[in-house]
Image 1 (tube, rainbow, N blue to C red):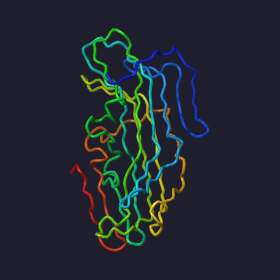
Image 2 (cartoon, helix red, strand yellow):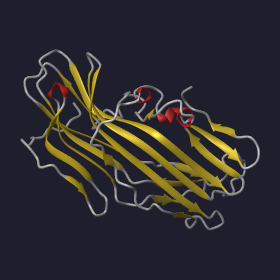
Image 3 (cartoon, one colour):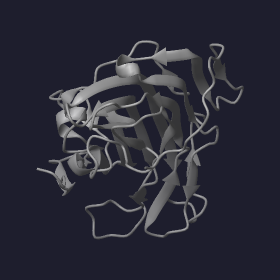
Image 4 (cartoon, rainbow, N blue to C red):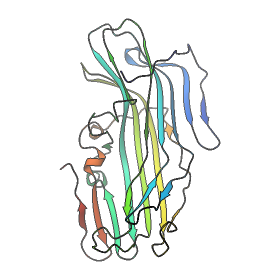
Length: 283
């Protein structure tokens, strides 16, 4: 069972902490008890207080690595009297995505989520693509198989960041001459802490988080490799929000496809028709 057991406190003073560098937000309190007697002792969420790093070591692509979003929760599951299974874990969905790579006056490449962009769905699953609807199945979930005689006490955690590669040259050109001039990315996510009874499909939302990652990189393709890219504002990311009132999970956030399988890479020239560079894996 991918869980970390711990000893819980009878009660905690309610705390909301945001460190000076914006490194952690924590909401605790007297045991918050939900249906079925499930107790959430504490939830923490943060984005590392470091800037996005840029890697120009390749002559083919620019790579960047954003700081990590991190979330953890301390949960107590009461004894389960029946032969049933509960899973407690994190579910995440992307609710907004803008991801453009500009190539001067020639045009831009754009990673897009068509159904989300066209308003057909409210959000799209950010599952690992295997363990729907969960974000993952190691530290991200804990499975409790009944019947049990004692409380099950555990911590579940998750983290997320971006580490993509962007071609220096126009992606639809046979030329390998660097033309990349700007990278812009703005994505928003909702992350839920959820308990699910796999026998009855009963789902209880325990906590809702909002977080956002913004990125702007200015590139001078005429400069030597290693001296081309410069990170622009925002250097530091806004910290996640731990909501005081939970939000429902849209149905599209619980099923296939996930964002990675649904996204398509488009080339949008300044003049002419857009082209599909990489089609979606899921159709």
